Length: 355
Image (cartoon, rainbow, N blue to C red; front, side, top):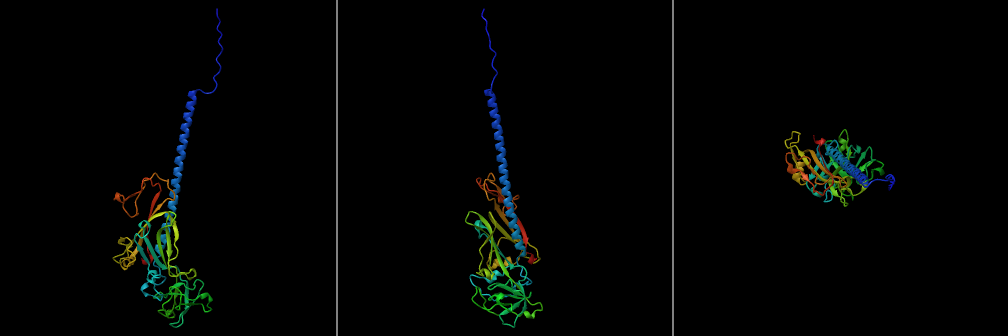
């Protein structure tokens, strides 16, 4: 008889092939899930960051431009500019009449057929008050405070009923009699005469001196592929030189793809806007229309600084005063490979000094 001796089977060590495959599959699923969550969160973060940057630009742009529009066409206590006399030399480089315009606008003259806005007036409160003016045609005026007045400054003097615009030709700080001199001389643009149009001593309240200003708002490409809203203006400050010409532009906000505006006209004389027009230009006919403007509505199209924010093909309604719900054809859709984030900012501001 043969005896079979069986040895007990050894205990299994490690994992079976099936268990390993199941573990790998579960690990892969978890890894894919975590990756998907990370990608989604990263995309959400980029979109939130882009939206925040665009919103900041839109807020700053609309705030700055709205404030300047509301303050435009303010000429101190002088209400009727037809009573203002210029003794400045007029030339191709310096247009006195353009400096004394409250508002003008040009259509489609900037990058991407964007518009340009001109705003004029005086820069805040009076610089100084006249305390004595010798009999005409004396070329001096004594003022109470010459600290903000410098040689070659272009200034306006008015008694609220009439006024003069002239250029200072001496340094008041070096004059013991505290005088503002408006003799003819070599300063640019210079004065055509030394005689003011009136004697401000005749007014019980004397006269006040204001600093005029004219500003332009428009878009420019800065050379680095970025389009920005900039401001420049006619230089009326003698200390900076180049008086009478436009200063170098200063950027307000970046990544502005378009800037459109319309003027709200009062064509019936009832003090209310009854017609909106595109910028009428700087010709005489356009300036006549601008003289009837009581409000400006403008629209910015702002793009995110970085791409890869959207899936492409974003649609928007621009300018903001279009009714794209009633007219879907007015809506703009960017290319499928354009993954920037776009947003439209539109507002209306009234010219308070004309209301």
